[in-house]
Length: 341
Image (cartoon, rainbow, N blue to C red; front, top):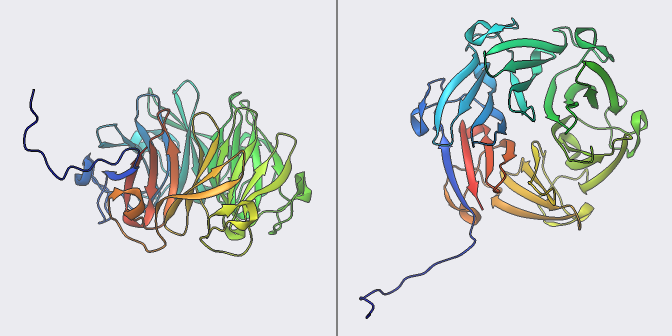
């Protein structure tokens, strides 16, 4: 067989590609497919085993769903701010910022930030309930609504069903058992950058959160410009970054971030991915603590294509599926973006 006249063909293998899954740069609340749908400063994201995304559409006060094909629907809430429990549009939220999916895929947990509450959504019925906290801000351990939070902004579950919360204005990492018992894992309430155990450690507005199979918690510590690690015993160390903002790749404290927000582990838990305020997606190799830039640059934009030339505008939420696709809540672009490995 003789080849035809094929010339000037270039193939690059293994290049990550950035695309827009849903939304446009114009804010709105429309349901629809891909760019026909709209969001208003969307943030947190969780992905199920079928590739469906559940997202916190923060300034629309809604929880939305995006199928793997990019079809957007509203799961709960309305564009009217509220705090009511109820089914679907009868429920109300106030600036929800993150979501976490239960292991069996039946329940979605929501960090309902300005309500100072953790809410649940039954995905079979659409019923929204208040799991812990109340609309009055506080810093109090206890059971269910007797506990207090102050702008909880990150939520993730461990394999045993315990929920961990980045309690933003309390500068603390909180834990809720499946039975609703709230305790403080680390942080004193005061802002700081001290490593240590339990309340001897300090954070400065923790936001993103991820949990590994051993129960270690990884935190995007926004105003410390650091990624922190908390063991199940509450021992806090700094994994990467320093209190000086920057955009340098490197190992541990030689690397720098600028207001890192969302964090997410890959499937084999060898790397942590970070939605960095530098308008970049960063990667931390957990064995070596080496930080590299996966996609984006410090210049904001909305360009798709090869990761090295793609751009974001204040990425906040981040999640990975089992095959290594990265989903990003590109907040100031009002979009959800996808990075294919």
